Length: 113
Length: 116
Image (cartoon, rainbow over all chains, first blue to last red):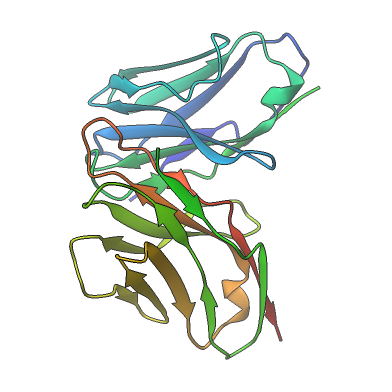
């Protein structure tokens, strides 16, 4: 079975541009999580969905960040406008349900110049 | 809020030897889940082992085992017969039992070096 799929794997953009990160969870998984990894803050939860509904977005840093899950097989994390401090690796993870083990995608390395 | 502490930023071990990575956590909950994830240079986060707090028996997965001390809030990972492929960052993670707090709280990680 395919694991969690993220695209793009690498993204370089200029400050002020809109960035969209994409995630396809493992088929049959009901919960989806977005994490961000930086040297300064480590791994931190941004938002998670259960059955396509956002449950906890308290980790979303500010209004420039938004996430959607229009269906069970697709989620996006959008940054508009992007800033250099948004540079990080963004991970998507999914689990069969909210209490089960989370399986991570390969991550998207974002660099904002 | 729960916190996870990994006090060893870096550890080094000779190939074939045994190494133990430390993790402590702070929580007021009685039921929760603990995990160790491995992150090799590829950046992929790979689950190593999982422990449910209500289980007294320590989890084991082949060469990987944990020492779970609930009263001490300690969750260490032991890697036996270390192999070169074990070289990676290792992250300890905590998850609440539910109720809307299902995300993982991670420690800062331990960089494990395997000396050939």
